[in-house]
Length: 132
Image 1: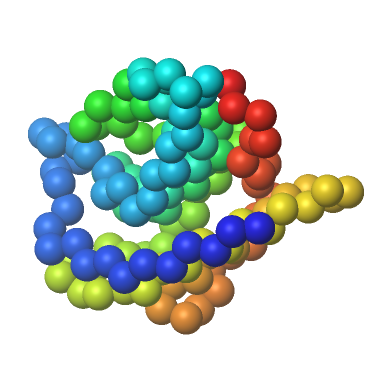
Image 2 (image 1 turned 90 degrees about the vertical axis):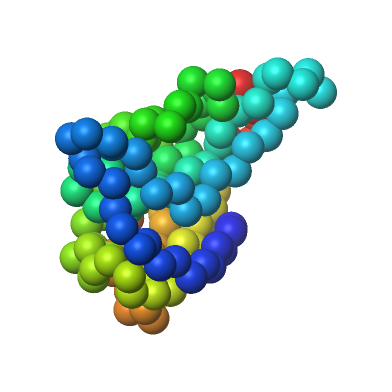
């Protein structure tokens, strides 16, 4: 499994209509075949520009397809969207923890904690072992 812990304070969210870009909390990138331009995002956690939900994805995506307004799709077995109203408050610090549980015989899952409170535990495909 994997655990990630961070403190985050958003001074001001972007306007979802005029300047939509998410707050990137975590991006794990790996390289294919030692090529310099074959970088794949294999895990991402963001705060959505649209509704401030936490989006977690293990769907692989080429890094060069992710511009400033990129946001993971919030559906499927490799992506989850978790709405957390506490994160809407601008200028306030929050402690966020992501725990990925890798299971062999059953579904893998993730848990999200915000300010020491468990928000959700859901099924999610784990990061693919074989890139690409």
